[in-house]
Length: 144
Image (tube, rainbow, N blue to C red):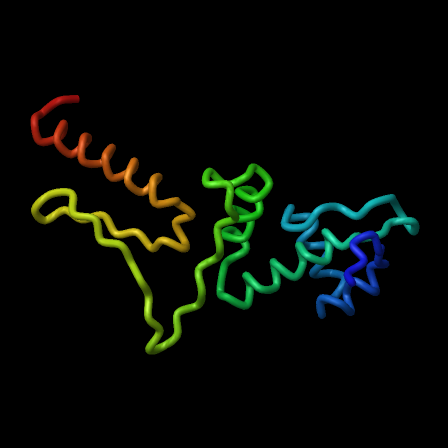
C-alpha cells in the first residue's frame, strides 16, 4: 500500500530519484518541480515532488529537451485541452514503427497527425479537419 502522505528530506529524495541536490534545485528553479513545503532546514518534499522528479527523469531519458518538458509541465498545470496528459514523444530507435493518421484535405494536401502525441480526441481531430477544409476553400476562392 502506497503512503502518499509520507514526506522526504532532500537527501532521501536524491536517493529515491537517483539525482543530486544541485539537479533537483535546478529543476525547481526552472519550474519543472514544485518548491518544497516549509522553509530552510524545515523544508520537506512530498509524494507529488517524487512523482514530478520521476516524470522529468523519464522525459529526459526519452530525449526531450528541458524546454519541451517545461511545456508539458505547463500543459499539465493548466489541464490539457482534451483533459488527458499529453505523453512525451518516445526516442526513435532504428526499426521503430509509428502509426500516423493521414487526413485528405484536397488533391496534394494532407494533414498528418500522430494520435498519441497530439493529445486530440477523435472528435477534436474531425473538428480540426473541418476547419482546415473550410480555410483551404476560402484561400482558393480568394476570400480573406
